[in-house]
Image 1: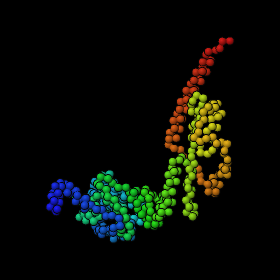
Image 2: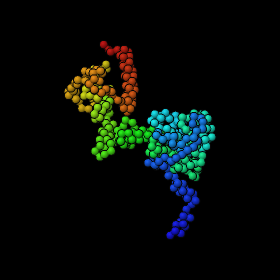
Image 3: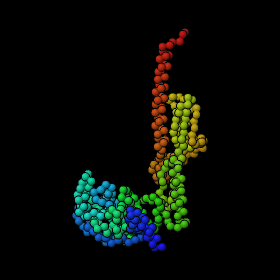
Image 4: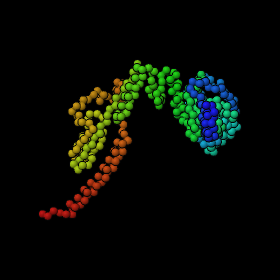
Length: 369
């Protein structure tokens, strides 16, 4: 049995064997693992400095690997993380960039202007891993090329890996996503709640538990339902006891008025029961009367009741906790409105031309008495 296995293995192409070994050895450090001990020379503020994992104990740490200095995708990543280092520090986190280059190569790259493909001044350390031991210990070393993959590790203050990603060489990473994940873990650790897909600050979280999780799903269902309606108004703040006040969307109704010639003379929208569209067309300066009037809401003028807030100013509304209202126009409605304006201008131009010709004709051709 062993001999047959050896014969089968001997028939595997050499390149396939090499790839298989690379895949077997590539096991990026996963969550809940302790960060490996590392120590090396880094370029910090334009000088050499020895740093280790012990220097970052008690802080959040983002450790990201990149393949090579003086390349193409790598500087975009390093500059992006470096330029936003203050945002990470504001969250109690530090960032380290690491590659298998020497610290001399790192220094030369930092001393090269950005317009020439360099990094310029950097606000994060560039750690040298010339013997490749750090990349290997984190499981991101491609032994075929001797370069590190684009691995990224989020390490908490206790030295435990909480999040890891590993990209192949051609594709860079997102600083925004790293910040989002960092904030999510910090929020979860502090509040004991879990963060759903695409979670961002101030968005709903889930309290672990069958009944408590239903609150989240009901809230999301209501939010998704409201997105399907054109609406006005602002979200009320939660009550002091933490009760969420649901937003109640108010539908925006479309109105169209057409004259006796079939020309559209009014196209508008309203949110309440009172239809302004009809009254804006009757008795207009052109003196025409709508022949066709349609609305996405049935005529309810007789049902209108005035409310107390109809007589309140902005100060009174705020005092009684009534939210401000503002109509939001959809892009489609705006495009239609602009197109209607062009049609109206063309119609008025044509109408004025016809009127002028009619007046001239009346002056030239006198009736026979």
